Image (cartoon, rainbow, N blue to C red):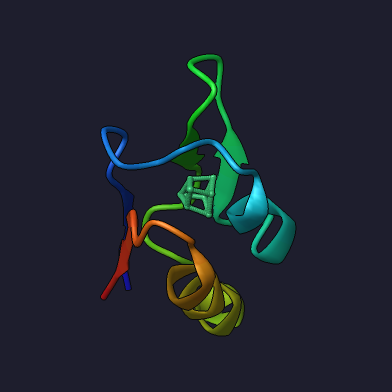
Length: 62
Ligand code: SF4
């Protein structure tokens, strides 16, 4: 499973690293970034939850 953040769409709300801290972090540009590639098996559920809850649908997990 691979996670991706669309930096052009992300509004830097900070939600995804709070849901899946092993997969996302907030980076120097103020946007979220992916820190786990591939997504570890035990973080897949939280990564999907972050995808579903991102307010601007900037996350793709597949
Ligand atoms: S939840 Fe969405 S908008 Fe918020 S920081 Fe993560 S990618 Fe950006």
